[in-house]
Amino acid sequence: MVRLPFIGECAMFEIERTSTNDAVRIPRTVWMLGFVSMFMDISSEIVHALLPLFLTGTLGASVAMVGLIDGVAEAAASITKVFSGYISDRIGKRKPLILLGYGLGALSKPLFAVAGSSGLVLAARFADRIGKGLRGAPRDALVADVTPTAIRGRAFGLRQSLDTIGAFVGPLVAIGLMALFLDDIRKVFWFAIIPGIVAVLLVLGGIEDRRLPEGAVEAPPPVRFGDLAQFSSRFWGVVAMGALFTMARFSEAFLILKTNSEGLPIMLAPMVLVVMNLVYSLGAYPAGVLSDRFSSRHLLIIGLLPLMAADLLLAMTSDLAIAFAGIALWGAHMAMTQGLMAKLVTDKSPPHLRGSAFGIFNLVSGIAMLLANVVAGTLWTSFGPSITFITSAAFAGATIVMLGLANANRALRA
Image (cartoon, rainbow, N blue to C red; front, side, top):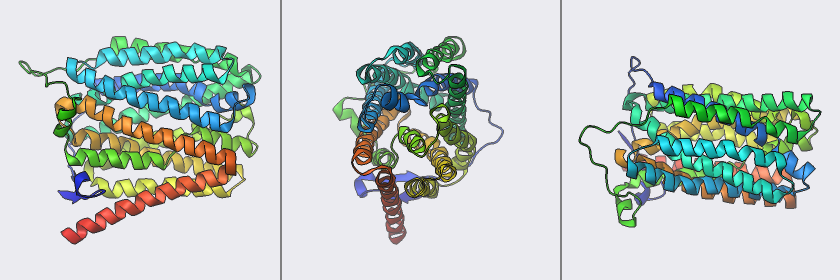
């Protein structure tokens, strides 16, 4: 077992080298949650792939407004995850909140098609992300609930991989529909409703809820101030680390705006998310397998290197081919870090507080995402895209240095 000091003694957490049992199969519920995520991501990414250009081109919004809308929406999702995680722990059920969250996500899609102002787009994004917040923490907690410890990394990696398949299929569908409807974005948005409905039906018919041991009694409400003491310093270290990772990575909307500013036609704008999410999908499951077999501390540092390289490429180039290489590296960073962070949250929190743990983690990360998006939008408007990406690279580099210093500190203590 290895101890890793992170941002002082109060944020100490332990990273363990784990062994994996290849004979253990990933539970059916995890597979079904992955397919539900896939269809909802197809629905969401049909919209999100075109939304930055819809806002700036059709509705005349500024890039700073794009950043603000994305930041507020993601922060709302993160705040909601705290309450949904708490409620799922309190009632001992995950599925009702998962269903409600995916249902709200599906119902929000028509609002994008009829939006006549950035205000209505903000309302639609807000509703969509509230749905994400309602389902996110209970869904991740359910994955942890039904999966043996030895294969948690690959279970989270599998769900993330299926989710991300939807995240590149959605933009491909958007490209085809844009060609069919001659760049009429509003008509494309209407088609996003269909995969959203499929996701809701899969939740209804395919997801089994957690099963408590016979005679088990649920713990007291976990989000009372005094109950936060049940979370160890190792868990809070993971939370702090997640915030730093998020500050180093703003919304993918800025990747779409970057390629469009370099000449990518509006009809092909969704290719940005296709490339990023294809790499993300292909890498998420192998990264999950590695996290089951090796210490996480080196994987976290390695996962930041592609992000920093991506930022530097995007800052320095006006060539679309190089920009897409940077976008692929961005996807590699996501694949290497997102499932690993979910595994760490699970490993460093009590089993009866997993929903609340994911809620708290996502709340802090959501606040960091809001700040990152507002900073990115302001820098883009004031100084241009190059400074925006250089700033992101600086955050990634600072995070690498902090993790490296923490490892050095640990070595000195050993």
